[in-house]
Amino acid sequence: MFKLANLIQMSFPVPDSKKDQAKDCIERLTNVNNLANQLKESLEILSSVFTEFKQIDGEKFYSKRGMLSKYKQDNLNLFKDLKDEGIFVINILDDFNPKSDSIVNEILESFKNNIDDIEDSLESLGNSLLDFDDLDFQNKILILVENCNTNIVKLVKLVDDRAIKFLEDDVIA
Image (cartoon, rainbow, N blue to C red; front, side, top):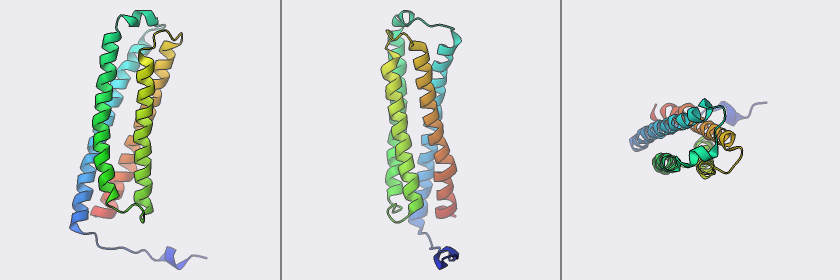
């Protein structure tokens, strides 16, 4: 038996100020995705270098540690920009009252978790990138890059399929 609440779809007019916030949030979410895709492209370059060679000797990379350190820092800076945009998104979504709106709460929590997952995987990659003594250096880097890319894809999918869609369909429309 259906509950009466399931049969009634309630809708309330959305104030223009909330619609403006939603538009700003969509713009910021688009920026998050653009930065995430730039980060993914950067990681794919590293992956191609490590897959191009059958066996990479960590000692050979030792002479390139300055370049690898700069690469690591560039990716961390790119992630910082992504995280800064993410903070704006979180602040905007917080205004949509996630405590009473389960959809906003779910998007918000997933978004925060995805950002944290990317940060953790980038930190693991960064720590391992200069660990030339590891006998499985090459495979470890490839696995960590793949882990980073998986987390980035999850974030982009969340933003495209859920966050932007929700804002366009339920707030702006």
